[in-house]
Image 1: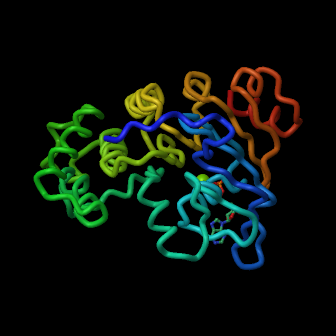
Image 2: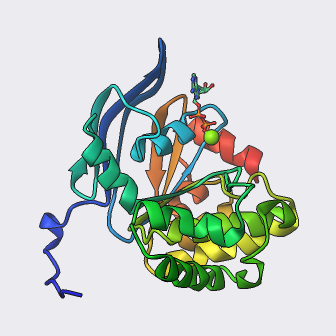
Image 3: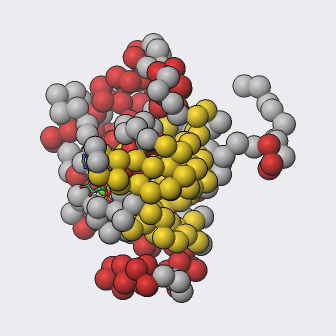
Length: 254
Ligand code: ADP
Ligand code: MG
């Protein structure tokens, strides 16, 4: 690998930069002038009530949804209608959903090698080695030849994380990865995410797991009605929120 000298801060592109992003579904205006900057290696936690636009925001970052105005720049590449840009960004952005979205008819290992073969153009043996390495990383290598339906929810979600990591993304997006899990499985998934954070992964996580946020977030963002209402370090936002809506939301949560 070629060693590059670190760039001075001012020249280093943000991992993700949103400027005045607006998004509508038909006539329904969902995101209003959303601006957010996420530096390399930062971990941003997004919270807020149901329907506030958190999933839409996350999905705009890898172009699962299109925005109508404003700018979204991922690792220096602006998202536009150009397919090459979308592919470029998607290759570097891994996503983990609330409902795992594993292919039920493929084994765990096949789930983890499919996109490596097709998108990364890796040889089967290399793809398998990489998949097994990440399945070990999420502590589930013994399930490689099982089907998703044979695994618990927590195990499936760890496979989904491994599958995303197999693409060696620079940025990971998580959309409520633990909210569909039984309580006893939440910790194993959060522990995996904490491990990723400790390894320096750039992460944007929609989650209401405040313990996780306190432990790893460089910044917590509170959204309501399609707007970022306030943001700050976890101690500040949880300890002394400035806005009434944030206070109300947090008091219902704790
Ligand atoms: P959150 O993730 O914070 O619960 P969402 O981003 O899922 O919020 O949704 C924000 C708003 O946009 C909600 O009112 C939701 O009903 C609406 N919405 C989400 N997806 C669609 C869609 N595909 N078409 C129309 N409306 C949508
Ligand atoms: Mg959502």
